[in-house]
Length: 346
Image 1 (cartoon, helix red, strand yellow):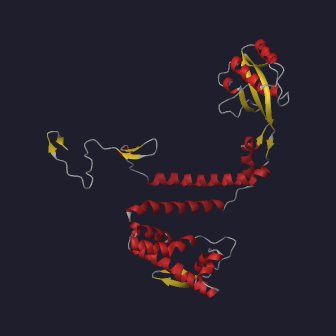
Image 2 (cartoon, one colour; image 1 turned 90 degrees about the vertical axis):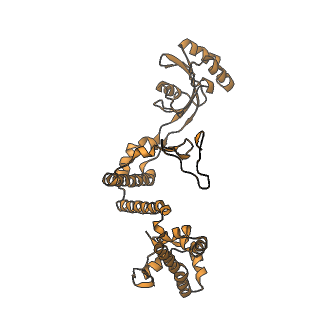
Image 3 (cartoon, helix red, strand yellow; image 1 turned 45 degrees about the horizontal axis):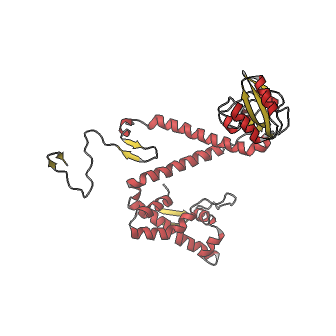
């Protein structure tokens, strides 16, 4: 665990007076504890520049920290380079090490309340390590092409037609609906749909099937229609009524083409960067899952699931603990001890 991490938790769990001192001294430090921009070259000089207790800071480490600070913040440490270097070490780096070592001496890291937070830090560090290892092997063009071909439907969408349809039981009835519709009145169409359509799922929404694809898939969830509807609608222009009834299973449909969306084709070159990011995430996730499975097999044992039955989680996420049979609930501090009466202990 890094000293900077320990210091943060020391500030949280110390006494109020110490906490105020820690927070005031470390407010700037917490903001500065980040890696420098990769574009900047950092010195490789590992000569020890500062010794604080049992810890040391090399020239490279000091430079790394200073490089991470925005220029406008560095100006606050002094008017020239020498003042800035000295002040940054004295006011930021040295207090950071001092507080970290004092927190370690007080064994603050062993407190039960800190254990989950320390585990989170270690978990995050491991995941970062796994991600860095995955990044060392770049995604190849062949992998990108293979992903694109496998998910081609995501990047190439055919023309979609918005179809309103009245479904009736016979061809003659469909022909009468076509004849009675003036081809333009939406209110008239809605009235005919409610009166004539036998499709209960769409009759109350004007027979709107959404945008239909050539294979019959629609933009309406869980709605798939006969491919013949698309084929018939493709023969007319937007806003036109298909002049003849369209067979749909054992019934017939009156089809009104309300609009359309042009086909979309995004080639592999246009999607290369997005696909690379997807594959990198998948590779990282697969590596994490593989390691987790290995560690599970090696270390997880003696899980007492039956004990967890006493922890209830409600539908709104509220956690409560059920009492066990034969176990008296703990007496709350301040409440009188139970007394025996004519109705037992109360």
